[in-house]
Length: 166
Image (cartoon, rainbow, N blue to C red; front, side, top):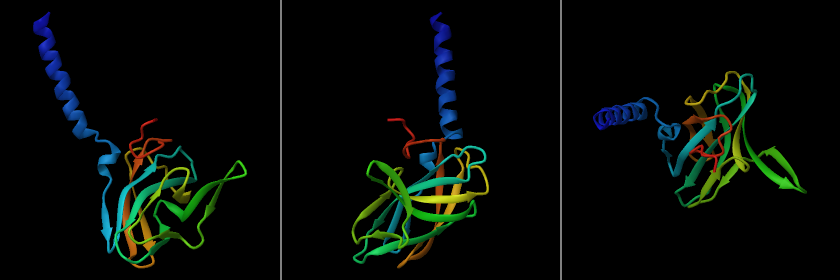
């Protein structure tokens, strides 16, 4: 019996190794993009249900420079309209609204766009976003101009980039 377990363990180990290359986590596709003084990291979105007309996108933006900047617009080929939004609680009611003047990026600070806070809202989706897809979103900044960023799609409903349910 012991002679059978060793080959089985070897096969399982080999399959696990192959699977890790064939099916990497979406987080491994996340990229770091530097444009002028703006550093963009951990860009991700969520898979959407069939027929969904909206989806959110999230990232971390660090302004490494000595001058403030501002994220003022966004666009993507997967959506008719893309806006920078904020979710907030007021009198026990969750409210989502577009940031008409964009998102301030103070000098030397990091701003996180995440579920339940600042985020990018894709509206009028023209396709379903599947887990593992890469979605290109063009972000427009006052000082550094337009930057194309690839957003990796996490599973449907993922609460964070690592898509753990913790």
